[in-house]
Length: 319
Image 1: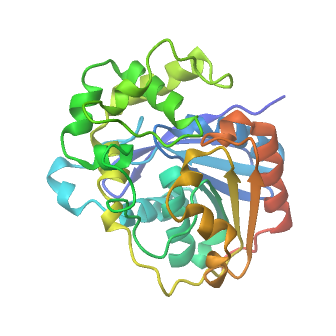
Image 2: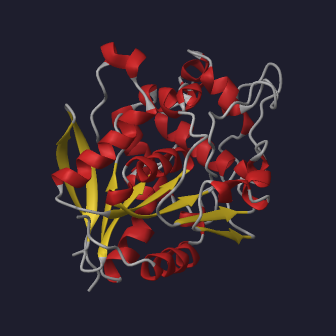
């Protein structure tokens, strides 16, 4: 009988973080870090597969997302990527996990990479979907048009006004539709990002109305205030890692139909060997039909790749 995902709240660095988990963990622990507009739920297929294979799967809602608490508003100026790395460490400590694989996608890849660099003794390996490692902050001001969604959402108040025209379910639906395509979402002059799709545009075939309900309910609780700050208004705060040297194995899975593959420099970073100087033990696999949400779109394929990596790198307990 399949194991059931359990939910708990952990007091982490002054706020309560919601954590979904499943599995006994005989073979080790896997921590899954979501992106936007996702939540722990986006890892449901991988969590159950990892648990069935003998691992403990842990998927937090990032601070400010879903069922996790919002960080205090009066600390907004100090919000940083380091918060997300420190949260992962505190979650492992709270659950008495000495060492874990860290799996991230979308912006969740960034704390996954940073956690491995800062805490190699607590990291068994890193798996990232869709986002290459960057030793410098991502910057799109000079390489992408003004209507590029990241630039638009980086403007204080713009996304709030755009999203505010619709209910939360419609906003999440539109973002899922746009992000599941192979083209980079770019608005024309006089157009907002939410105008790029309407209710006549079908959901991707792998996303059900029930799945959309699950996402919408969680964003109903959290709203979009923190998600707009982290990641979209914090990309300039990404740390410089020009001297980075990963001491753990890294596995990157890239869907070739993921619109992020068209971001300036991304394909060159993945195909050109630039990351190998930072990652001595690096493996990259491409999924030709894979979209930005490849782990939901093609769960069996992603699960097979993930479990193969985990089995090839059995964790050695931290000293």
